[in-house]
Amino acid sequence: MAKKSITININGTPRSGEVEDRLLLVHFIRDDCALTGTHIGCDSTHCGACTVLLDGTAVKSCTVLAVQADGREVSTIEGMEGAALHPLQEGFFEEHGLQCGFCTPGMIMSAKHLLDNNPKPNEEEIRCGISGNLCRCTGYQNIVKSVQYASNKIQESESVGGE
Amino acid sequence: MIAYKFDYKVANSIEEAFSMLSSAGDAGSFISGGHSLVPAMKLRLAEPETLIDISKIPGMSGVAIEDGFITIGGLVTHAEVASSYIIKESCPGLAECAGVIGDAQVRNKGTIGGNVAHADPGSDYPGALIAFGATICLSSSEGSREIAAENFFTGLFDTAKEQGEIVTAVKVPVASSSAYAKFPNPASRYAVVGVGVALNMENSTCQSIIIGVTGAADHAYRAKESESILNGSELEENNIEKAASAVSESKEMMNDLVASADYRTHLCGVMLKRAIAKAKYRS
Image (tube, rainbow over all chains, first blue to last red):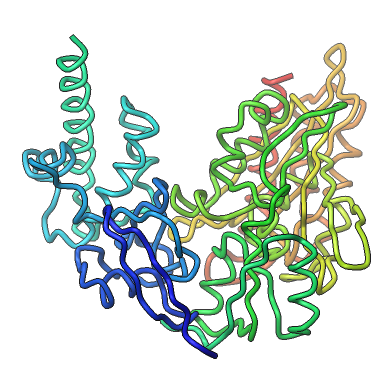
């Protein structure tokens, strides 16, 4: 079984590789592209540490084949920071949204998907939005606050920009 | 965890998918969202030699409503069903069911066609689709056929679908008084027990009720004994109690680490009551 040539646009940069069909997207991101911000936790579709955006949609990259992402766009935690920290990153910093930090990249990518689709989520909607991400430090209270911080910050900057 | 080696192919049309599968024979498998199949392959419980990606086949996406039936393409994700305006309006119980499958990321990838084809006993859709009178639309190189959801789920991970058939769509009749209630496994979010109810009330009398149960037995089933207790009644408390104790009556409940058979029997009744209450509220 010959390897396949794939090109995945990761954080705006085309990344090409010759991969086995069975290679998981998370391994392509971490091992072939050396983007190790995306974590592998349970490796069984439960914990969400490997969450990335695939064409803007949050998915668990341990359950997607790299060949399935060929020609598509992937965003990882490394792509979040622009000139400054993304409001979500700032929120996790300000609100102490991480303890050990293992779940944080996945949490932030899930929260990004949530805020992209629902810019003003209430607490229940935030908890539902991150329900596919486990924090074994059980720091959920502060994670929710971090997402609320980011939501407020994005609203504020948009209202300033709109005036 | 790494799957056994396989050959991945992308089908750009349904005809191409059939021809790829026919070359692969029994060792071939279709994949769409892959959220049942990939985990099984990683655990090496499934070992297809050829994986045929059907997710790019045109004409199997989208939700449409016509002549009292909602048609949901086989490639429609759970997130799309949960947020579809058509489905929320015309079959709220189905949107409710899709919205409690797994978690957000799983709902973004998993598809209704893949879900019913896989037929996990703890899957949510089967119970809801049986209750809402859905039809599963299948196609193969031999032609197309339709089968009622009630007759589709036949056993543990087993359905009436033949090797080589693709679930192209699921058709659901409009059922505004529909509801789904579920007791999730707190870790996996699979249904320990899930109950779907479609209700037709006229002048405070239950003209008809259909009840579908998932998670409880080795495959989803229709709870006809409970239905017959409630048909023609005014859904008085004593009748609902009788129906609740009959939901699991003739079925062998699963007995595993998650829940004992007795506990599942109990949950069947509780979930039925919750689903009826929600469906009644919507009528």
